[in-house]
Length: 65
Image (tube, helix red, strand yellow):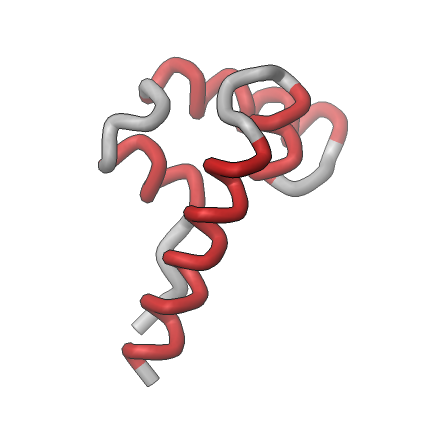
């Protein structure tokens, strides 16, 4: 099973909108960087949300192995 994408997890759970995700992806394409850091630096999510979803992402990956 492929690792779930952080941004997709956030959109699917209603934490961010698809438009916010698209905005972050445009920044990533232009400037590079990790999507989670971009979302925090743009004020779309806070650091706590990033940590929670990274932990959830890691748990999903670990459970699917």
